Length: 394
Image (cartoon, rainbow, N blue to C red; front, side, top):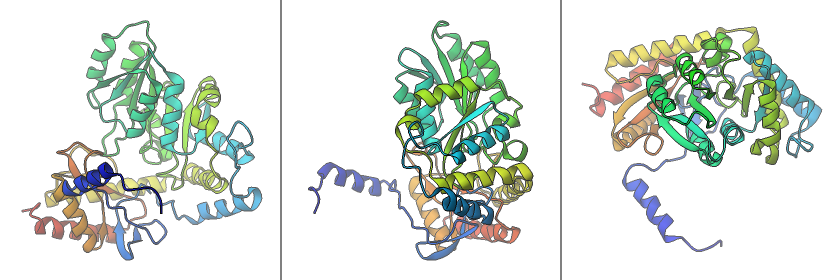
């Protein structure tokens, strides 16, 4: 038996449950798709970031198997010692071409990418200007950098400008924003943010985790969406969502990427992406380069479901992307709704504090290109039934 029970941890866990803030972790018993097995029950899946339905795509599976047969499972080393294979270099070259960037460096995850990039660009005595709703990985990367963090109002370039205007002109500055915000589904006005950052000589970084495979031509992301190629200093992304695999990346000028290969700590001190992941990511890039059909289907499904939910009377707030929040406010109500949806055959998790503010509890719906119209119609019927039962809908 391991060490003794720590009393304060036991008390805190009880407190989370009493406040309806405890996160019940479910177990998936099937491949990820429009329908999955959760805790032994088959349900419609509106929880995954599998935007394009690639997580179980036959071409990605074949590519992963072929990579294993040729290179084995993992490099068993960090990239700077013995962890860089031919496949890693091919993936970075393919991503750079796809993103229309000079160069790309890959990491183990999108979270790792933010922890790698931010402290390599700024440090103690520098300034970071961060959207107040930026992702936790950006917040943690900012803290690790030891730079001073100045938050500006959510997707508000005027607020950003007022903060930059009052800052010391001689100090190094970095502006950071999410591209698509993961909880609200709204898009950063990157074109306007770029104008403000340029005006005050600040570097600009965007985390496009939820824009990869979603925005831009064939899902090239928010920089492509706003035609800002070569203007955004660093574009961080992930292969863990729309690409259906796992891994992170940073795209930018060759010199910037070279600097990251020398000073980004997750690159220097954590083992490289595994071989099957790299092989599958390469296949995902090829699929997107060859066709934009999946991206178009994703947006069709998102529009159809959002329109149906609004007609029913649900509050979807400011979402304009495939991320659709059903705003409920109360944590208990959100958890009750998630549970009732599941009982009726639909998997959509409650999102509560600290992921969102105390009074902003919600059900977050994640669309995919894999859902059929019939599945979306079934989902709308379930949302309507549960909404009426819980008196969310009149």
